[in-house]
Structure formats: structure tokens, C-alpha cells
Image (cartoon, rainbow, N blue to C red; front, top):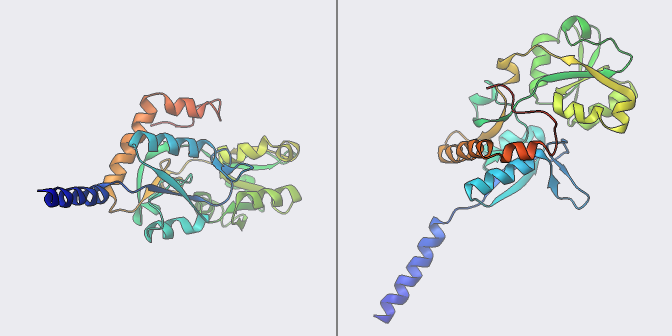
Length: 257
């Protein structure tokens, strides 16, 4: 009887270890993208998207960790299972949806052009004609440029927005094109306030710019998608989403349904 109890206890431990949930690994770009994610002086990630990740993980009752990669390496790394979900201000577009799946959106903002304060405002094809536009590689803004601006303006690409901002400050590009909230953070910085202003939001095109920012998943990970969607909805409903957002913004960033 004692031997049977020992064996049963051992089996129980083994079964417990097999059924325990592994941590959910969140992949983010390895460069700062304030106010959504950036490292503090100690090297710890912080920002709106990090707070939202923590709230979602708490709601799911899961342990979570962060995996850092270059922006253009996020989708390949997800597919090769280096992490479980892209959580890096990635827009859900029809093109990306061909290779990966997405959760429900967790925020949505316009795409915007910024430029020197003395430049004529406007964000149409006529406004950018003959100009050079700085854009981060592998973004929806780069795809938008190809569709609407490629025949009339030059594109200069960058691995990070910070590099594009430096060239804007140095006069090497006429515009930087990106997500309005990320560009707004630059315009509120000391350097941005001195040099630059918002030129305007481009006309929306959901086929190119997407249906909002969402978590990127492997298509087969349907259970994780269900859990993440339930957690996002719960965080929206219980007030935690608004609590987090008010720490960083004085307006709603969720966007229209």
C-alpha cells in the first residue's frame, strides 16, 4: 500500500507538471517606441503597451515575459516559435493576415505626417510632391507610401523612428510619416517642440493601414487567441483599460468600433 501511495504521488507530480501552463511570451520591438514601450534607467520595459500586457496577463492568470527583436524580425520570429504573441503596436492589415492571425484590436489611431514648423501644412499627394518622406521599414505607413506617394515623393527608410527623427532635425528629410501617437510623443519632446509640427493625418485606407493595433498570433494558436480576446474585453469592461490610458493620454486611444 505504501509503495502504491508513493507511486501515485509521483504520478500526481508528473501529471501536474504536464498540465501546468507555460508562460506566455510577448514579442516587442527592441527599440523604444514611447509612450507605448521604452526602457527605464534600470533597463526595465515600461509604457502603455507594457501596462496593458500586464493587465491582460493578470486577467488570464498567466505568467508572461517579454522577448525583444527588431521590428522586421517579429513576424518571422513568431512563426519560428521564439515567442507566442506580437505585442508591439502592430496594425492588423489584410496583407499581414495572410501569414498570421490577430486578436481583437486594443487601440487605433490615425497615420500622420510631421515636418518643420515653417513648412506648409497638409498630408495629401499634392502636399508631399517632390519631397522626401522618412518612414520606418516594414510598417503600414511604408505600404501607404507605395500606394499613394511613390510616384510623386521620395522615401527614405529607417530601422527605427528615432533615426528618422534625427534626419528630420538635420533637414535630410522633409517629413516623417508614422502613427500619430508615436509622432506626437516626439513633437512634445524638447527637440520636437523646437523644430516641428503636425502636417496632418492622411486619408484612411483600412486595406493598407489596417483595422487597429492588435496582438499577432500563429494561425494555429486558436486557444491563446480566445483567451487573449476575453482578457482584452474584460480589461476594457472593468475600467482597467481607462485607468492605464489616463496615465499616458488625455483622450481615448481605442478609436471607433
